[in-house]
Amino acid sequence: MTASRIAIGGFLHETNTFGPSKATYEDFAHGGGSGRMLRGGEILETCADMNAAISGAIRHGTQAGWDLRPTLFCSTSPSAHVTRDAFERIADELIERIVAEGPLDGLFLDLHGAMVCEHLDDGEGELLTRLRDRLGADLPIVVCLDLHANVTDAMFAHADTLESYRTYPHVDMAQTGLRGARALGRMLEGGKPEKALRVAPFLTAIAWQCTDAAPAKDLYAHLRELAGEGRDVSFNMGFPAADFPQCRMSVTAYGPGADEAADSLMAAIEAAEPDFTGEVFSPADGVAEAIRLAGLPETDGPVIIADTQDNPGAGADSNTTGMIRAMVDAGARGALGNLYDPEAARAAHAAGEGATLRIALGGRSRVAGDAPFEAEFLVERVSDGAFTATGPYYRGRKMQMGPSACLRIGDLRIVVVSAKAQMADRAMFRQVGIVPEEEPILVVKSSVHFRADFAPVAGALLVCAAPGPMAVDPALLPWTRLEPGIRLGALGPAFAPPENVPTKETENARH
Image (cartoon, rainbow, N blue to C red; front, side, top):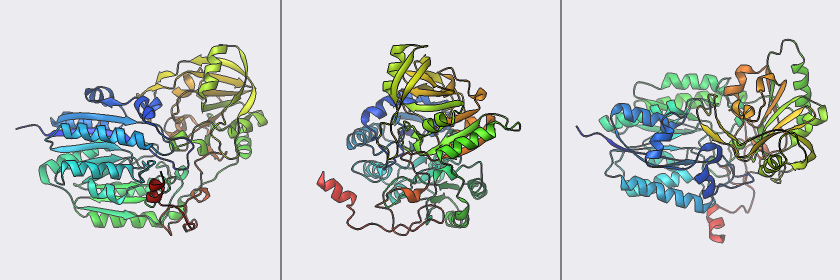
């Protein structure tokens, strides 16, 4: 019996259309904390043991005896739009590599599901449309998506199964790939499944989407009850910072009883709308509360403050200084990371360990209410930024943060890096000599992913809203192009489009 010939590849980006910096081809080529662009056999060699959906597909395909045909795999940190040049070059190469591997029995793709480009609202939908044009309607195509995918009509139409992560923090990316590959295996044996799509009438803030807590925890428990027995079910909580009409939460279901399963889960989601909320502190109030909690004898472990609005995992530049100011003003002892400032990192390396350096740190992304923080800093440690992640989220990844340093001002130590990556692994502190478990307060530029590695050692968790481009409340973002009537957050106001807003088509015509 001839082995099934399966092409695999990936192209991932999460787009915050309100973010300060766009994703270029070079960003995907070098990858930063995400790892460089991979081609052909490099994918099998590099990705097999990572926490990534493509890793799960490789494992399943190897065990199933598939003839795996690796094509191209790349990703980069979330940011503003993917440039036209980046999308067209990468999409063209990926498609040509897939077509060149034909004739195929199936295609597995690792995508994010929230890519917006300079010239396209729906990067993944466009990619799948072009693939269908080249590969035909009959080829089974399975796509694995991030839990934060904004599932569009085109994505749903052109993929035979969309299988999404079920955890946030995303510790099940490889398991998702396994589920997706198994779904592809069923199609190879029994044909394409029934499918259903449902869309929620409201958006939710990512800070309250953690699947370790209600309401998401209960909703995913219900999802698992509905899945199985040849049925695949996904709940995508969406990425609520992509200003286009199909930014949304959704449910997809595949297999026997797909419609009934999708209806059941969406009914539970709508009933849970009032519970997608939580407490947010101002920087000063958050630091004051952290100091209070850290001083209590029953607080066992550091108090963790999430600097949620400057989360590079949601399109921010990871360089705002609001939490630095609040910590310094309060005389708080602790550590903060990561601050993306390649210029400051280079200056620290040039000065050397033990030197005192006067610099204007961070604050260069023109975020309203933010500015560089100028002061004298002690260079405690410098590093090349190369280390292996040890936590559940980045698990096993060879991180390349570039020239890095630990800068100290008073009792605050700041991790300065030259590549953007969400502070979701304790090794990110250790790489510049900070032992995170010994700090009374840790400020992390993250929203939820940090919980995977930091929550087990935390004495308490707080969320602060310092100035940054990823608003903790979706209603605070300057939306212009959403679907009219969708609610901006749990029980939030209904969106009404402003007058005379250009469409993507008129914008493209102008350029």
